[in-house]
Image 1 (tube, rainbow, N blue to C red):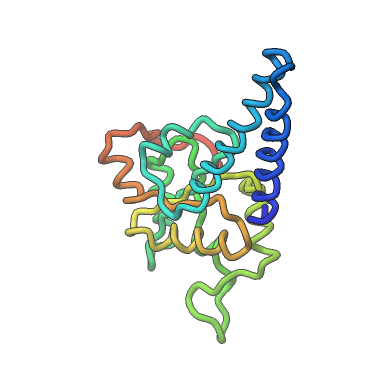
Image 2: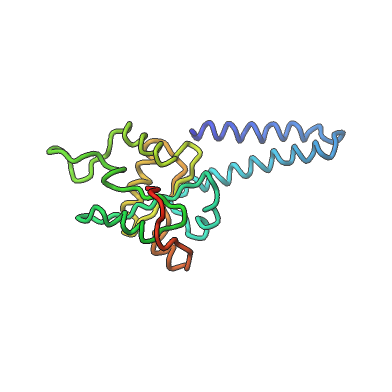
Length: 193
């Protein structure tokens, strides 16, 4: 969703609430409550917009949102020279509900004689990947890795490049999650990657 559209929606809520509040003295208590809720919603939208534009998220904030259906956690762990290491690390343990997003399979195009090691995929392929893993315009994506943010930052940048503002990198990556004593599945059960 574009910034202009979000600002227009928020402005419409505030304007509508203010207009309704101007003549509310003769209205019912329920009517005043509804108008108050519109103003409150506009404030929540401002808070949500600010959160969505933050590039980093802390483990405690992520933990508070894990059960929300419009949040997606992407495990981007990968090791150069060991293409299966990231998926194996994900299978061994990950943040609850996290899916594995692979550098070579999901975030790169095939290597050719004229490209580097991990060329960017065509937009259509990346869009298909986002659709496959369940990213919509309303999804808040949180990505992490085990390499100081290198691979998570690539996914973050690619999402921002295609216009998806709701993305953040877990500050400290998977290590920060584990160091805080957060729960993680010991083994992955399904092919959710």
